[in-house]
Amino acid sequence: MKSIARIVCEHPFFQGLDGEFCDLVCGCARNVRFNQGDYLFHEGGDADYLYLIRYGQVALEIAVPGKPPVRFQTLHDGDLVGVSWILPPYHWAYDARAITLTRAIAMDAHCLRKKCDEDPVLGYDVLKRLLPILTSRLHATQLQILDVYGAPEQLE
Amino acid sequence: MSDDLMVPEPVRVLRRQQELATTWTLELESGRAGRRSFLPGQFNMLYIFGVGEVPISLSGDAGQSETLIHTVRAVGPVSNKLAALKPMDTVGLRGPFGVGWPMAAGEGADLLIVAGGLGLAPLRPAIYHVLRHRERYGRVILLYGTRSPDDILYAGQLEEWNKRPDVEVHITVDHAGDDWLGKIGVVPSLVPTLGFDPEDTVAMVCGPEIMMRFTVNALRDAGVEDESIYLSMERNMKCALGHCGHCQFGSTFVCKDGPVLSFDRVRGLLSLKEF
Ligand SMILES: Cc1cc2nc3c(=O)[nH]c(=O)nc-3n(C[C@H](O)[C@H](O)[C@H](O)COP(=O)(O)OP(=O)(O)OC[C@H]3O[C@@H](n4cnc5c(N)ncnc54)[C@H](O)[C@@H]3O)c2cc1C
Ligand code: FES
Image 1 (cartoon, rainbow over the protein chains, first blue to last red):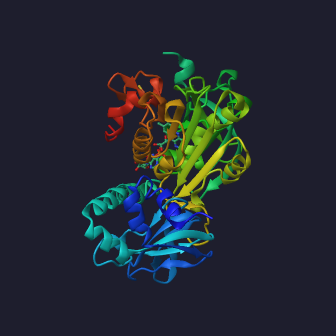
Image 2: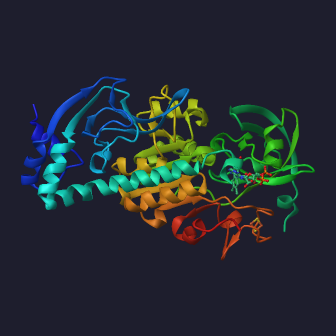
Image 3: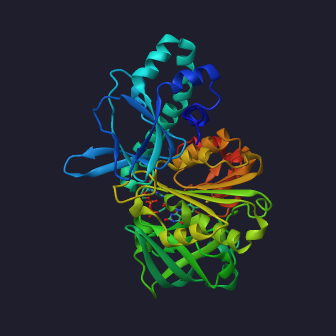
């Protein structure tokens, strides 16, 4: 069986991380499993963990009053779920739900934040890994808001 | 200017099939023999007498072109009338026009076919061609993005292609309810997840222009050369023959030199508003 250190440091999010840093962040990690339909977190909840998907599929959802929730993104093997853990006041902005059996690494956000604060070089490295994810999700959101496939009257 | 190409020939509608809420596929008589052969990516001008004429891509199989297949989304005066045509009704036909997808240039390479919404219609003849001559191409990946699960065009056919071991089909929708277990997200975000060889890939992209712009960015970020990215451009057209200048961009006439153009030729055009 793979050690948690290997799993964490081979995950695309942490791949190539300096060995010493890898040991540091592994101290914040544990294996978790979500069955189909389980929530990873709920909108408004404390962002105490971030999740690195090992395999499975997680949907990000926004609850709409009186209607079924709207799913706006799915995340898959190798993806990171949850970015609010790094942004004060550390609250989730949406729901995340496993739509297939999902195995992931849960990283304790308090622990990781503390280690990043204590060692700014590690903190900077983690931020550099997070920024491209944030940017690509921002671009994706822009495209979704434009509703490019919508009816013509909605495009104008 | 040849009368043959300027004067619409009346042809009959043979069949009409609803695809989506506002999208219909028409099967038309091919008219004069010359109209039967076309290249994947070419279009016809369809004329509703007394209303107007619009370019509509050929969306059927060029290898079986006894009749002509067009998929039309009802968005305005002409397309509304086209979509409402019934079997035995008559429509004016000119074409086929334009330069199609780089089916020959893509031989020996991997193909990345990226369609957004109705953009799958002009790409479908290219897919038929690839499947008919599968041995001529390397890895074949089809990415399809659309608004919601209810807006998936040719859903049954996508499912069939997905079952083939020699084609990779990835479908994603912008948003969905909890009964959809597929991918959700925009189609360009699939590009970095594919693990393809950018130097040996020819990309064919068709969809709303903004979707094409984002997709081109993702393809270039992945290392695909500008010359290997082909787009089908939509511009208002009148003559479709390179005479009237309606679709002109610099020295390029989208009707005659396109609609399929490589990105290095349309770089400036993509970021411009319709003129
Ligand atoms: C080479 C080429 C191939 C094409 N192939 C197809 C095809 O296979 N099927 C098809 O349905 N259309 C296709 N089109 C687009 C079609 O020609 C236009 O949508 C046409 O303008 C429709 O004419 P209309 O009179 O119905 O609407 P218009 O009066 O021209 O437009 C009505 C409204 O719809 C908007 N609009 C126009 N086109 C679109 C669009 N594509 N998507 C969303 N909103 C739009 C306009 O901005 C306007 O507000 C193609 C265009 C080109 C240039
Ligand atoms: S439509 Fe007349 S030049 Fe292209």
